Length: 178
Image (cartoon, rainbow, N blue to C red):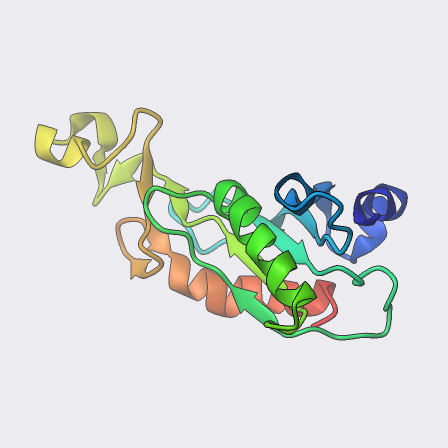
């Protein structure tokens, strides 16, 4: 199955570093289902965020069933931007089940799906330390300083749109069979 192949290939699944790869959970909901894809979590180099020392951003990538066997095949790519609240890890686990079933039923073409992390950690907001913000603004931040970026460029929170369009897109194209 794809999990044993992922372990065998480890980081050579792609040229990209992947810290962990695992099979999708489709067979839990559809007993005996065997055409499962693989989810890999990793980071990509980025220097578009505030503060400037944020150099690695997280992503999860869905690789369809057959990705490891069909080594010459190229795949279309979909970038899935999670909502608020949301994480690439949580949303990818759910959507990968839908993708597995849709692809197996020929309702969708096999594709690579990239789940970038849209939550950025900030120490300051518009130059003001998060802990010094008025209560109304503090409600927007969680206890660990996470603030959703809304997938747009922002002088306060970083350039998420630029990061996806110019950095992550090129990273995926260079490291996966797109």
